Every structure is written in C-alpha cells, then in structure tokens.
Amino acid sequence: MKKTIGLVLVSVIAVSLAFGGGQKDSGASAGAGAASGDIVFAGWSGEEEGSRDIFNWMRSSWEQANPGKKVTWLGWPWEQTATQLIIRNQGNEKLDIAQDDIGIFATMAASGLLADWNDLVGAAYLKENFEESSLAVGNVNGKQLGLPWVIAGGGMIYNPEILARAGFTAPPATVAEFERCLEAVSKLPGDIIPYGVSTKDSTAANDFMPWIWTFGGKIYDANGNVTVNSAQGVAALTWYKSLMDKKYIRTNMSRFDSRQLFAQGRVAFYDDAVLAKGIAIGNGVPADKLPQLVRPMLRPVLKAGDKPQSMMWGHMLVVFQNSNAKESAISFAKHLVGKEVAMRYFNQNGMPPVLKSVLASSEVQNDPWVGNWVKITATGTLGEFDRSAQKAQLTTILAEELQACLTGAKTPQKAADDLASRIKTVQ
Image (cartoon, rainbow, N blue to C red):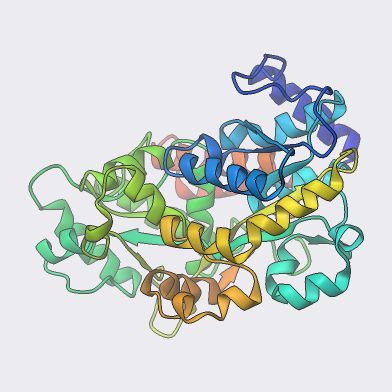
C-alpha cells in the first residue's frame, strides 16, 4: 500500500486544481512581508460556526501576551486543508503552524514538509507533558511530526428526549437493541430520521468502518492482506443495506446535514467526534438543555461482552520545516495546549485537554461529557487507512462501494468483492 511521495504530491496537486487551489483566499494576506516573529496559523476549525469565536480568541490572547507579534489565520473547509497546505508550501507561501487531524495526517507526513517536535521542543518535554498514547497518533517512524492538541475516539451521539418518546430510557447496548430502538423511533410523528449516519461523501466511509469492526471484519488482516470481503465484512454491508431498506438511514446525508438536523430534533442518532457539544450549541441547542438533548454513547456491540468500537479522532499541531518563525510557532503551540486555552476550549466546545496536568484536574475528571468520551476513547482504534499516504483514494473507494450497495446498484457481496479488488490496486 505504498507509492512514491512524488506520486502522492502529483495527486494532491490535481485535487488542488479541482478545489481552485490557485485562487486567492478571502482572508488576510500571508505574504512574505510579515514582520519577524509573526506567524501564519492554518486549518479549518476557525472557519466553522461553532469554533470561529474561540479560534479568534486563541490568536488574540497570544498576541496580547506577545506584544508586537501577530497571528494571521488562513482557513479552508476540512477536505481542502491538506491539499492547500502542501501546495502553498511548495509555492513558498508563508505558513508556520497548522491544525492537522488524523484524517489528513498521513498525507501531510508523507509530504516531507513537517518539522520534528523532538527537535523543536525536545523529547523530554514531550514525555513529561503528554500521554504516550496521544503522542503515538502523531509519531511516524520515531519522528514526532504531530503535537497532540485534541485526541479522542469518534463516537455516537443520541437525543435522550427522542429515545424517551420511543420508550427507551437508556441508549441501546447491542446491535439488536439498536435495531429495535431505530424501529420505535421510525414510528414517531414528525419525520424523525432514526440514524443520521453519513451516506453522501467520504465521511460515509469513516462512519461505516467501525461497524465493519463491530461485525468482526477488517479491511486488512495482520499481514496486510485485504480481507474486507470476508463473511464478516459482507455481514456488515448486508446489515447497513437493511437499515436503508427500512428507511432507518437516508441517502445523500452528509455530516453537516446530520449535525443540522440533530440540532433541530429531527435525528435520534448520528456519528461525530467530541466536538459535537460545541457544534450543537453553535447550531442552536441551548447549553442548559444539552443533557436532555445531546449525549455521547458507546457504539452498540454485536453481542454482550464485545468491545465497543470507535475510530480514533483527533487534532494535532504541525510546524513546517521552511517556517522562518519557528520560535513563535512553538510559543503559540504551547499556548494552544496550555491550561488557559485548554480549559476554555473544554468548557465551550467540550474538547478534552491533552496536557497531563490539565487532564488530571478535578474539573476535567468530574465532567460527564468528557467522562463518556474517555470511555469511548478507551477502546478506540486508528482507522485502517489512517497511516496510508493514499488515504483519500482508499476512503473514496470505500464510500463509493458502500453507496453502490445502499442504492441497490450492487449486492452486498458484489460491493465487498469490488471493494477488495479496488483496494488491492492501491499499492
């Protein structure tokens, strides 16, 4: 499953053209004329409604603590971020530090553009301040290319009020219970979508992969052989198709759609990350109503005693090798993971801190939202495409074959066989 980095960058450039990568951004200029010590911070969350205000504060609070220095934000939609970061680095545009996540980290790591945090801050600092499991997410062959910022397992979100109306006082723990709950919700008035799982774009693949694991399947076995068309993989696809046939899930559903409809009380379950709390508030759910309307849950298991499955999710911070303001970038990174920012991010958006000292605080330990995410994260697994530089291509393949199955264009077996065949060509 490896191609040369040159081929990866060629494909990234092609995607960039499709996204209009050569067009000028609407944000502030990040040109070479910036003052010494000024930095450009890039990513996607600062573009999102639920995070925009706190991202503005993150920058302004660092500027206040560092008079004469400025942080310029450069942002795009998530799916364009990796492409834009690589293209702009190759074009020698000023970029110093960026928000990265597990979903695009392989592409960024393979680009050869990232600095090693072992060199930037020292291995001793990393070991003293971060859990080994968090560091492992951004470590590639001994190089710490990503600094942990927010690390958690991806989970499921449910609306307790809708479940109560359907006769359920607690979220379902097994697949069989989940199906019974979906059936009950489907009979409620108001056109409520029982499960707002993503079926529209690449997020469909991310939502589906933990269900493959739940049914005992894997994309690859321990030796790297493609096994997604095993009996377990086909069973997962067959089950998903049954949810579609029963109208428990819908076609053409994106993560954005699910979040919006969930906030409106029109979705009972959907898949999301720990940031779902802030997104729900940003989409109009009153903060004091969160416990009644928005709660995280463990993914249902096939049979009692199985391990609940979740795909590891997280944001990291990366510094670029060609940055001429690395000291400022390091200072800003420490500001972002530090207690003041971490606790504000935690209280406003539900993002769990990563510093050992902050995680150990009673305020974090006793919070029910993060407490549930700790349980979800405890059995989390890195996505099977997450260490591949061809993740985008592989994710698209999985999403396409899943959609072919859901629409009835292919049987579950045919979709699984074609999926396995196409994955094998990505070497």
